Amino acid sequence: MKNIVIAIDGYSSCGKSTTAKAVAAELGYAYIDTGAMYRGVTLYLLEHNISFEDLPRVEEALHQMQITFKRNRRSGRNELCLDGSIREDEIRQMRISNAVSEVSVIPAVRHAMVRQQQRMARKRGVVMDGRDIGTTVFPDAEVKIFMTADVYTRAMRRQVELAAKGEEVSLDDIVQNLQKRDYLDSTRAESPLRRAADAVLLDTSHITLDEQVDFVLERVSSVLVDGLRAAENG
Ligand code: DC
Image 1 (cartoon, protein in one colour):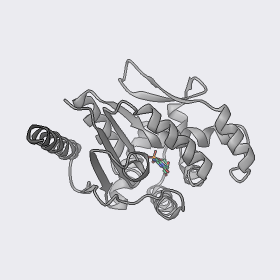
Image 2 (image 1 turned 180 degrees about the vertical axis):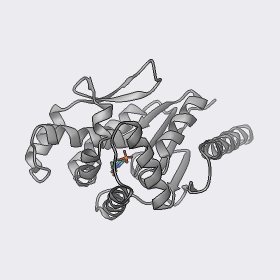
Image 3 (image 1 turned 45 degrees about the vertical axis):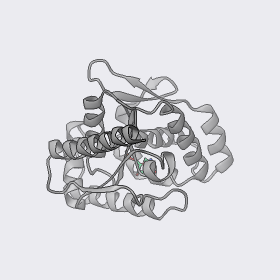
Image 4 (image 1 turned 30 degrees about the horizontal axis):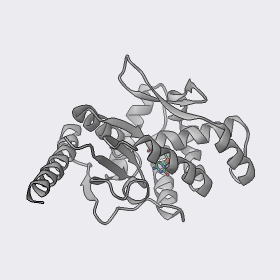
């Protein structure tokens, strides 16, 4: 089977990462959660008391910090590491969700992350989720999905996820955070969140996770079959 890139972009908390993880497991592909990388940068800047506006210090920090993923054998998950330590739980906290969109508008941050994402998927055979994968990181991705869902559905899912980690947050606070991030993500100058012209829209408001995964896998099969036909005919 040809190794391809599957780009899953869309709004916060639409189920992108759960879908991407399941698709990667099904295909034996690597899964790269690019949002975790921006969260990791945010955590680093906060911990080192670096103002997001202090661009020289942000650039210096980008050279110093090491953002990597480590596979957790027990859960099978790829966990985000900052300078070698797993920081998966901290990057999911609300304090990071509240600051991450301000960090991900910084062009130097985007350039560094995009370069690293392109290097990580050099050999293809990956499912990558984020905001700009189909438009900027891999405009040549063979499968592009753009996910969306009703904001209350997304907020309720996020509330359950946070509660499972012991963080009780009101639905209103989550809705506000999602709306703020949607706005900042879609209106920033550098690689804003937008649907690539060739991305397929997937609205997850009223469908199950299994249906989301099947939808993506069907797209993958049809792209692979078309590729085989083209190779036979060419
Ligand atoms: O997917 P997530 O909610 O964990 O992402 C956190 C933030 O990172 C999101 O609000 C916007 C930013 N992000 C981005 O700008 N580009 C990406 N490719 C992925 C995430």
